[in-house]
Length: 157
Image (cartoon, rainbow, N blue to C red; front, top):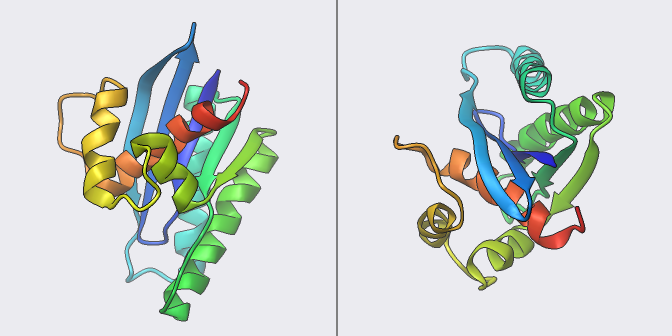
């Protein structure tokens, strides 16, 4: 089973493809896709959709796991990210992927065992759970891997 993990954003989107075979997860692909704030918002959304279509075509996942949004402040950012997340859900539905959504709390519990973990704990724990390429990764990319791992932890797939 291959899962496309997505950490939603408008400027930076974490994308990962993780496969489970015989109970073992393998990292196949991950990246942090970026859009420029100089572009019109609609164009940024289109670029995100195109990138997800490219990844789905190349890696053929059967499911998409995506983080549910949680914002305490900054409604302007929340709206932009929510619109981007809508494009992501549309892309997954259009590709006929099974869609799984997880709260930040669920992701933290699945990856670290503690619901109040911070970003550093996720960054530290993910490489302990799955072998990653020997290169630097920013938090959005690692979060996408964590979201895919969360899907395997919660779902009977």
